[in-house]
Image (tube, rainbow, N blue to C red; front, side, top):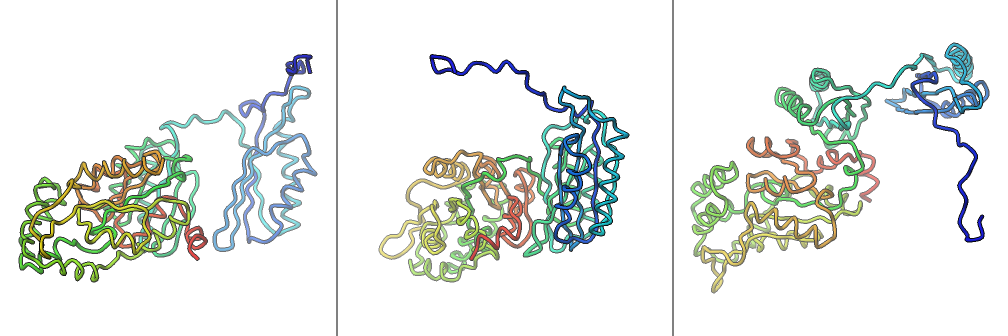
Length: 425
């Protein structure tokens, strides 16, 4: 150390990282019945037979129904002081390792060269492709694999995320551009009836921290406005307006005012009746409880009514809620609204407001909804999921989920069934 407290530069040359394009590399693939000690025995044999002449470059292991597949990429060390061992010698040493492990633990070990320049992967960053269904038919996986190969993509890994309430698999795909990948897989999903979602690989996927749920036909079954209209004897009229609005055929704010107008004169008590008969979408409680235990802020943003959504949010322990408010005078609905209208742009503004309130960047937010009035919110969020949505909405959202279980959102977010069980006591 110098007198001024600074540290002088180290004059000793430091070894450079091994060049994968010059030093030989080899892949060992272990397969057989899984049992304790296989991995330990393999690496002990590697250390004994190859010693400091090799380094571990990559390891991946998976167990499927008790069958082990373990892949290890090793490379010859070239530290500048001595040349790396030749490929023939490296292969010979590793075949000795393979023989020892096969004899000791009764598995198969294949040894093959992996030398040569690294392939440059086209298509940018890799993506996760999540296949969901109940069940997932073989033709869905086959179709997805063909579609991925057809646009030049490669499946690097596959793992199961869940077997309940839906079966889901996650494929890690490289070499494919996002838009082309989504387009190719959308056709497979349509043809086979399964759901296929696409997300970019990266830390952002597991860094989500806030979720916003639409209410009608998302968090709960059915449309509250239709239930209220039924009590006013105007059900069919309002249902037609609702359908047109959700399909994007009518301006939501205009359609909302038209539908609310037919409720004029209803006693305030009908709001309590409708709220008491709400039916949550299957998996809603599991989704919310799991995400809350994982540190998410959870809430609802609805084009419905605060008289329904505020008590619902309280009963579910949600962090926030936004909706429209029905005007009530002398115990009866006037057919009007009070306050700001929560319409299509209003939902997006609410998402932004709640994200700012909790200090969460928009790219760490998730929005789930089914109607055209959800689209701004879905596209403002870091991840927008169209849940059992109209075709108009599915085509414009980041991804679509058509399973009847709301907790399937967890698999789209990359959480496995085991992680869900660990999070919910």
